Length: 451
Ligand SMILES: NC(=O)c1ccc[n+]([C@@H]2O[C@H](COP(=O)([O-])OP(=O)(O)OC[C@H]3O[C@@H](n4cnc5c(N)ncnc54)[C@H](O)[C@@H]3O)[C@@H](O)[C@H]2O)c1
Image (cartoon, rainbow, N blue to C red; front, side, top):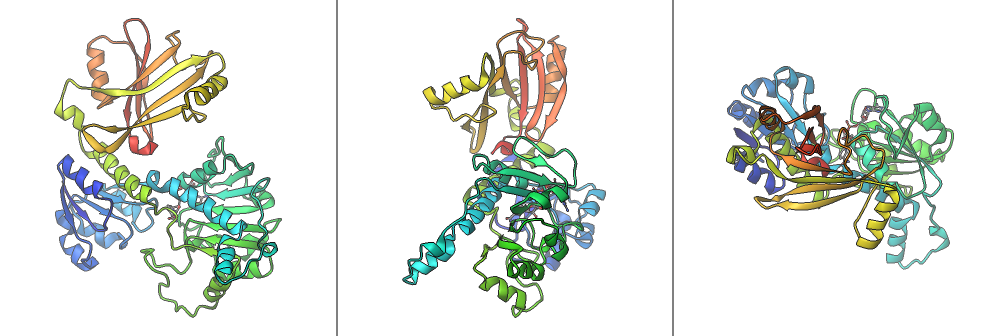
C-alpha cells in the first residue's frame, strides 16, 4: 500500500505502517492543486486538517482505499461521497477524548477560581483576595450536549466532584453510569454549566444563539471545546453583558479557519464582538488545543495504525507464525461473595489501582515496544451468568491474533463453541469450553481503544 502523509504526526505512525509493509510518502508543503495531480498513485492518505477532502479531490484519488483523519471529527471530508466510492474513513476519537475531558475540566475550574485573572494581578503587584473569591463545582448541575466520545470523557472526569451530570443528545439511549440523558428542555431548566461536545452539523451550527440562551432557566457558564460554529459570539457577548451567561470557556472560536491553524477566515480582526470577547475577564480562551497533548499525539497515531492494520492487513502474529494464535492473557475474571468489598481489599492491601470494572494492567508488546497491551482483572458477583455454562469460580480471557480463523480451527478440532462472535469498539470476542468445561473467553483486541 502506498500512503501519502499530508500532516506531520507522531513518528510511530509512519514507522508502524512501514512495518506493515506500507510505502510512506511525506508531503507537508505541496498545495492542494499539486496533491490533486499525484493523488491517483496512492492507496491511503493520512491528514489532520490541512485542507478539505471534497468531491474534486475524491474524484482525482482513483485508487484511494482509506483516509486516516488523525483527530476526532470528519467534517473536512465529504463523508457521503467518499463512502459512495468505497473509501474507508478512519478517525481516532479514542486518541484525544481523554485530553478533551481534562481540558474542559481544567478550563471551568480555572474560570471558577479566577486563576488567570489572579495570576496577572499578582504579576502587576496586586494581592486581591476578596476580588478573587472562587466558586465551587460541588452541588452544581453540569449539562452536556453531544454525549459521544468527548462528552463521555468529560462526564468521566467529573466523577468525584459531587455534581449532577445530565446530557442531551439527538441519539436515544446514550446515557450511562456517569450521566443521565434528558430532554433539551430539562437540560435548559437544570444546568448551571453547559458543555458542548457536538460535531459541526446543520443542527449544531449556531446552536447557542440568543433564543437558545434565553431558554435556560438559570444563569449559567458555558464551555465550548467542540466547534466554534456552535456558538454565535455576538449573542454570547450580549448574554455575558446581561449576566444570563456568567462566564465562558472557549477552546474553539467562531472566527477560526477551517484548518484550525489560525483564526479569522475572511472577516477582519476589527470584528467588534471578537474585541469585546478578548477584553472580557469572564471569558477564558485557548487556541483549539483541548485534544492536543503529548499523550494524545501518540494515542491518535496508534489508533490510526491499529484501525488500518485491522481493516487492511492480516494480523502480523498470524502471518509470521501460523501456529501462534494465542498471543497472551487478556483478562482474569473471578466470582466474589462481595465484589465491591473484595476490590477495596485489593486496593487497600495490595495497592492495585481499581475502578468500577476492576483493574487494567498495561504492558509493552515485546516485539513492538511502541505498542501497549492491556490485561483486565475483574471481580464478578457470585450469581453472575457470564461464566455459564461453566459453574467454576473463574474465567480466563486469552488474546488471539485472528478470532475468525482460530474459531474455524477450533471447530475442526471439535472444541465446544459457546454462542457467536461479538464485536465491540475494543475488539472481537468469542467463548469456548476446555476439556474440564471451564469457559474460556477469546479476544482479538483493539488495544488503542483502551488507551
Ligand atoms: N477542541 C478539540 O481539540 C477537539 C478535539 C476532539 C474533538 N472535538 C470536537 O468534538 C466533537 C465530538 O467528537 P466525538 O468524538 O465525541 O463525536 P461523537 O460522534 O462520538 O459524538 C458526538 C455526539 O453528538 C451527538 N450530536 C450530534 N449533533 C447533535 C446535536 N445537534 N445536538 C445534540 N447531540 C448531537 C451525536 O449523536 C453523538 O452522540 C468533534 O466532532 C469535534 O468537533 C474537539
